[in-house]
Figure 1 (cartoon, rainbow, N blue to C red):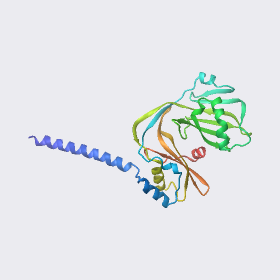
Figure 2: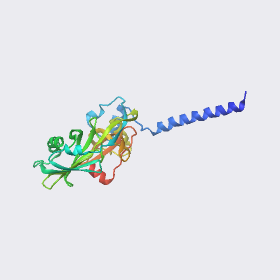
Figure 3: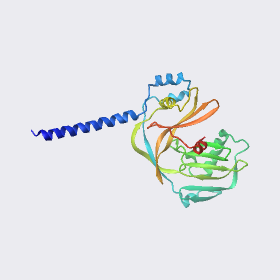
Figure 4: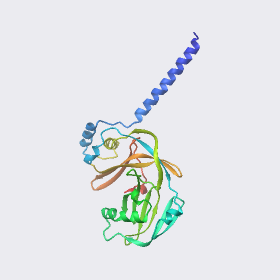
Length: 272
């Protein structure tokens, strides 16, 4: 028996085994630590963090993938399909429109009024307007913003997937810009989604949600993970709206990797 070769084989197998075990260990410690549902509820209750009853509806493990998408390049045919407005295409990926006549939104300009009144506007004046969902009303900057949807879920804070309506001082729509993503499809291997309840526990443990806070809204959507010039990879993301002492906070938490998305001050103002 050639002991030299046998020794070399044993060393090689040992190294491969060590690398395999190290990989499992690193993956394990990088995963967010989560408790059982009952323990999580008790932990959140102990610091008086409350949330909607339907937040706990997702109890079983769900596997999802990231998604990939490309920026739509608008064409002259797109321009021609839009009536009663002057339309320009900026950098291929952005439509900018000026309405022939201002679009009156009425005397009241609350979020609920705006959502209802703008359904017909989006369908009549924009491309696939029913595939966008209300994001925010900014009375100070006179804009109303919408996020593009994918399978009913919003694509959060993405300049390549939004409609921004511009208002005049009489609170009438005078112009808008539109961007859109297309060819959206699954990307990569499916992974277990961190449930919204587990996400709250992680956010509370990290100090992102303070004691005596109330979760008023939660929704699942997508946020950009890897941006490219004309395409993006987006990852499933939880959006929580937190209230405490009349102050409102928006938190975005990636549902696969378990990371908090940090925004600049300007980005936060646009989101809120």
